[in-house]
Length: 109
Image 1 (cartoon, one colour):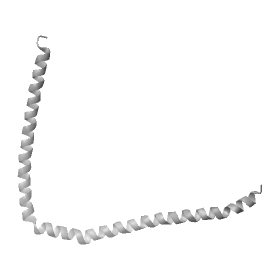
Image 2 (cartoon, rainbow, N blue to C red):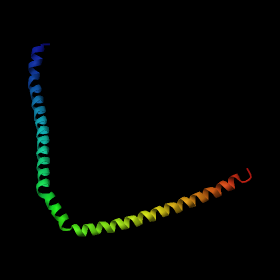
Image 3 (cartoon, one colour):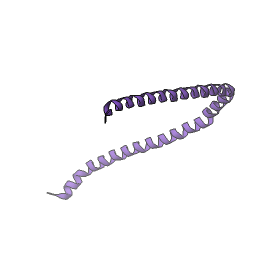
Image 4 (cartoon, rainbow, N blue to C red):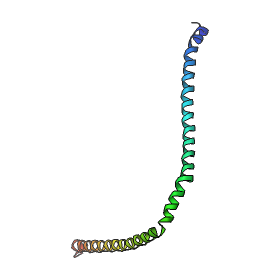
């Protein structure tokens, strides 16, 4: 077995595999760079174009939004009060039920 001959015959396969790995890694790196550029571009567009428009629309409708927020807050307070009341009723009903079961189980002990 001639080692030098074997090494020489393997060189084309090794080089082909190296080329394949290089191309793959270049593709991965290109994808990373493209995503960075895309993120930067989108962030700039959102900051420069979209955000000012959103702020302008919010400012334009400020009084309506505040009025709606007041309505939402009132409805939320009412809903919370109702939910607390319902929970209290359930707790009392459960306590009464547990007391009844305990009385029946332990009566006479």
